[in-house]
Length: 233
Length: 233
DNA sequence: GGGAGCAAAAAGTCAGACTTATATGTCACA
DNA sequence: TGTGACATATAAGTCTGACTTTTTGCTCCC
Image (cartoon, rainbow over all chains, first blue to last red):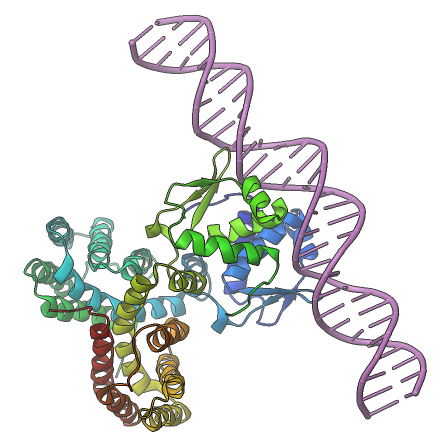
């Protein structure tokens, strides 16, 4: 994913990051730079760079005479894409997936409403194209092609909202959707109702009907919540 | 703010981070580690650590034989609290404030709905206390005390939602609210209607009325949007 | 028992030498 | 004239070792 092995410090992070985010070192654990450098067979300078990155993610804190202390989970930069990937790859995957899905359920409807006001004609066209692609691949176990258009659809919505912070969640949504298709149970074709909702959202955006776009998107995300048994009354 | 001057590399970041996020180096600009090290009068190792941190924020990309390239804004980790602080402190402040307010308007209502289902009795009590504190300080230019309770109120809501990603936005909301009180025009006492809404949200959460808590919180955030002339029809 | 001061431990800093990847320019050949 | 292979320069990457600084926790004396 992204850029694997961009230098030695990156290799170290590929091991240490997942280990920490998976909770292998409980909060308060103390590591020593020299020891880590030996363990990973890299120089202290490389190890220090790795620690600096972990520190910027608020996963650890480095203090003189003490060492590198693992911080409690509530301190972590849980929006850092790298942290999200590490957690999705490890034992915390289910919880991370739930957190992200709840976040989606908050953001996407509002983004759709904004998109209905702000989307360019090109974006409207793209959206319709994605929705049609979803329809075309919604039957006959063409899950990969369906996923492709689904991801593209949500990306366009988030981008067209005109809010940079919404737009940056495109990658996250892609991970969540991909996770649902690949890891979890999804042997059957996607729910026809969901497909229809996407088409309707595209229509609403094209028609500049913000309220309708928001309401329909909320229906989509509520469905996603139910799939994970969140919001069960 | 937070931890200023945690080592030489931190000092470098305090200058370089704001400069980059303020757009002083357009996307594509190339910096050289050695030159930067000279400019900031630090060793190359320190400079390298600083660059690694900027790289983990996706503000820059370091490539052999090329140098340290400034990445386009769309690549930045705009959820990184440090990046947010840098942007709030610089010329991009107004835009950053808008982005964050829109994000709030999406997240907080959903968080309030979840809080109504999940808040502990202690959290309900805290919420009521905050709301009362707001009422008590809503008149007579006691803006600082009002702000204190306002921030606490929204923090409790976000925490009580049970979603770690919502909870992590507490700091962001604090910055936005503080910004409104300090920087922007807020000479007068807060809007009485807004105060009443907070009290009602606390009531709704205590009464476990998720739908009402969500709707009332949405009214609060819509107010915040209007203050910044967003969503003008 | 408590405060002053000392010593050790770990991170922080620096300088210099060396390695590696790679963009770019050169030149021969088609 | 265009194109491919090759050489070269450049800037990041890595390693090592010596030194500094901060901070903890212990000891010793009052």
